[in-house]
Image 1 (cartoon, rainbow, N blue to C red):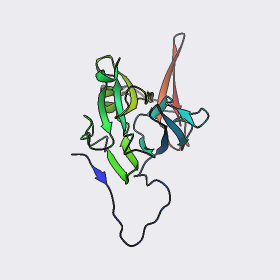
Image 2: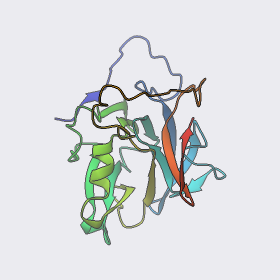
Image 3: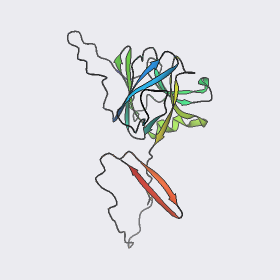
Image 4: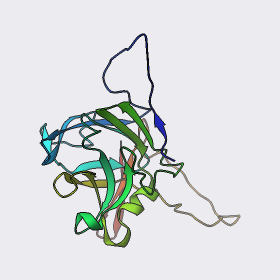
Length: 208
């Protein structure tokens, strides 16, 4: 069942922009007729660092971060998070505005929520590893599209950040001495890691 949060207010209506449901990052799309989405606002350049507005741009989503995506005309151009195929018919819908239910919407970790009042709609979700896996399953690539105009209004998603596996997966036997040293502190909100190989040395960079 699609989890939605719609509120009808009879006496007093307070308008203060889109209502985001506990999200780390936010973005807003409009549309150019039926030909493309137009990204008009982002809360961080981590999502998109180019000039705005931008038509069907590639957006960046970090693992374990929560996103609120608002579409000004969402009832006419419902946005879907998809695994992009070679053609729209081969796309796999994972999250969707409107009555269509994506295959990942019931995942509790993704915690998909739809809010707003037509025509402006917002979807909020967590970019989980399982959602990232679904985006790339069977040779697909991460992306988004309009449900009603999937051939024209579509763009790519770059997923970044990854879970760090335990560097010492087994119990250390007694008698082995382990030294510890501080390598980084004062990280406000780490969102991922990137590995770089330089000769025989591998470095890990933390994105904050």
